[in-house]
Length: 358
Image (cartoon, rainbow, N blue to C red; front, top):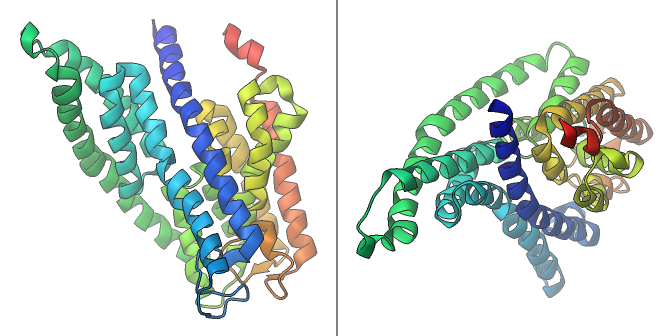
């Protein structure tokens, strides 16, 4: 009975992932193209490639729009689509509205893609239960799927996302940031390891954002080591899954293998979210592998004394003069983290055929 329930939940999760994947690929590739064309300030038409202010031109505005389409269009819908189609798989059309709104609220409350998964299952199962609990006369039955179920489910799911999911996450993030600040003065290597693991834990979610925000905040104080560790650790998850999907084909579905090439492009652009479809499909095996590689990348970056003077950009910032200190060793940290991720995926992920038989 429990095994059947787990298989059902896995099916619903995979439905959400399959609908989310095109949004991740399209959005991420547009971001990468923007970085390639205009550097790390692609998002700002009033910023030159060297960081100086300028008058916006048609050229800079065009690439800022391309970046925005990917970042706020594709990535902006990613968690909503994931949650919405998990709920759709469970409760059919009435689950879609509360699921998508719950996924959007996961972003607003800072609970990220993990919050989106919670919202999707919550919306789906609650809507399914509500559908069976509410009995209406035949002449009013048409109102249930288009009005009553979406309205009540959206209200319930939305309030839970604000009061049950959002508040604890916000409190935990504040405590986490305070702890990281204290860590900075003790052990640089351990700090790099922790920041690295955080970057891969939820890939764009609140823990990832806490690590990134912490590192960006230190740039203003002219502390550049944590920023280098965070970017290295954020690049290795998509690079690692891309390499693993190429080397160990039996451990990945055909859809995942096709997505591997896109993940590689996202990885070099420091778009950690490129690994989310792989993690969402098999979180208990993939996330520990990603965290292992990112922890190694972050720790080595700090141990090598690498420093990054800009907050984003991936490989596109490496040729910029004075953007990275100890560049050769820094690239070595990224490569090492990618290889560890790939090796851990081989160890932890089972072949698809074996997984299907269990």
